[in-house]
Image (spheres, rainbow, N blue to C red):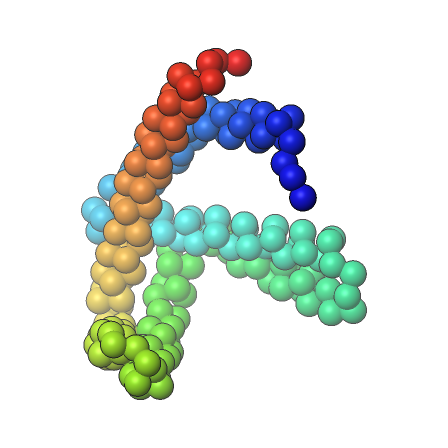
Length: 199
């Protein structure tokens, strides 16, 4: 199968038009940086912001489930609908009462870290004969396990600090990554324009 020149030109035009949207990543990167600034301040606004972010994540997951329900034709697609309704309810709850949603997330975090740490330790033990860095997975698993037990305690401020640090640094690194991507796209778009001329 050969690629014709017309297909190559269409692909180049598609790439060039996609690269012109570099500013979208710049805007979203700045928004992520602002979110990290709010979250890392460690106050009631931080807790509410994380609750709203949780609501947005649940809403996007809800829309994804409804889309899967519309597209799939299997007999089990009703599960997508049921899960979508549950996610919609969770999203609505997070938007109406973001602080309670934050504390619900904090309650589950310890269990998730314990499960993730256990999985890391088991994977490291199973792959130690084929993976030279198996010990790194073991160390990460032990740290996640200890962090999970620490987060499972009843002392709510400790859980809040853990979640706020995690969400804050996630938002910070996501913002930096998207801003770097925006400028890489801008540079690539300019070099393509110089090479092929603006269209």
